[in-house]
Length: 181
Image 1 (tube, rainbow, N blue to C red):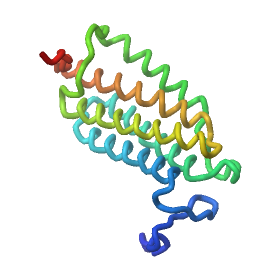
Image 2 (tube, helix red, strand yellow; image 1 turned 180 degrees about the vertical axis):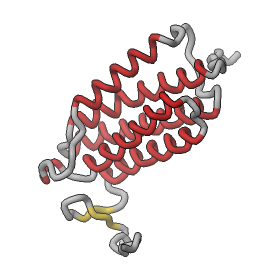
Image 3 (cartoon, one colour; image 1 turned 180 degrees about the horizontal axis):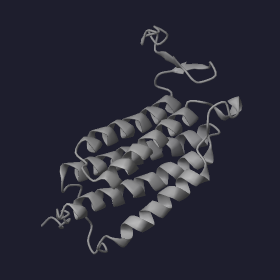
Image 4 (cartoon, one colour; image 1 turned 60 degrees about the horizontal axis):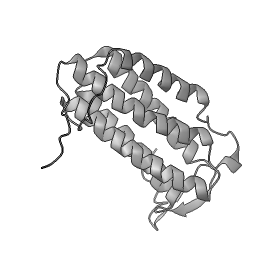
């Protein structure tokens, strides 16, 4: 099977179910940004030695693939692909709660940084927030699975906490934001 189809040579791409849309369609921007977040997580994973955290990131990558498939398949096509469910969002919440128990409470704003893996997780969080903004706009235009928006919102919080855990477990201080003079 060839990787190229030539179907996008005119600036269009196919959604799951056959509908053709412009490659700059908001839906494509949205699931493309989810894919970008997934790619950043892959880069972060290279530098994560902590087995528990590596398993968490690998699971989230699989979940993001599901998010992308959900977004690439209009709801009018039904459940021809697995859809994001509240179970995934609730699992993120439970993990956030468990990880926060080992972290010192935040008393200041922190800057993205620390270890390379922690920094990459902060970058993934920022990309996730961009995906969330695209999703919010897309939801005003098209009917989407509402659980996708909840999941992506929670994922950005999750990535923030996991970045902190990576730095904390490595004994690397988090950069504190200081007001410019």
